[in-house]
Length: 287
Image 1: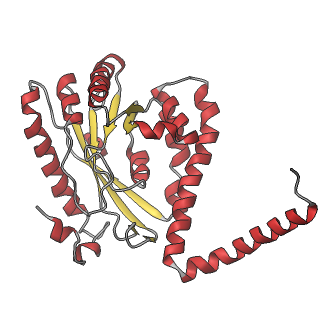
Image 2: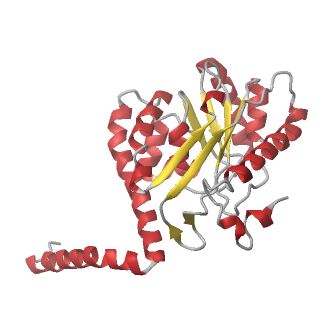
Image 3: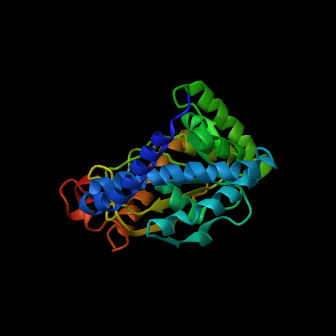
């Protein structure tokens, strides 16, 4: 079915009207600004993935393709006026596999991850991401490891394969041990898969902490402005000689050190400071 010429005119006028009204809506309504910024953020990532796919496809599925994705995503922080400050990058072991564990606040974690992502490092992601259109295919080509969290047996099997890959192919993996996004201003209890992986492979754990986004981003309040985020790389935690029986204590130890740093960098004027003064903020979320 073809549209008659007048229909195209009407559609064009509606589009122009929307473009004219959008700045007014964003100025008058912080919620409109929030939804527009998030829609553009997700849409832009999908578009960049379309551009990355043919370039990555030359190598096929390869962890080196993560460099291409990182290069294409680094500029997004400038579009949103977010300054990402990295400290402690010298703590990354120079020439060995390891497991990175990081706190997980929102999809904006991608900005901090790309800023500090070490070479030959790929995230472990939920399997649903694989079906996220162009982004899923780009992630698959970049070697992202997908696990089905609903099927425990499959997840354990994948983790065992990852442990072998870490050592055989000199690969690092990035895990969000909270298991889901956390908007509370603190950290959820850690799931232990990443720590079992590190102990099984006998490789160090490198904790990475991203400061609270609450001074510039809040999903509940529909608020998204410019701001600053600090990414802190902590000293690696060795696992040599540890056994599966040591995993619970190891996970608690790493979480405690990360939570301590999270509180510190989220209250030093580099992210989340105002939020801590609000009811229900981090000051009330401390354990």
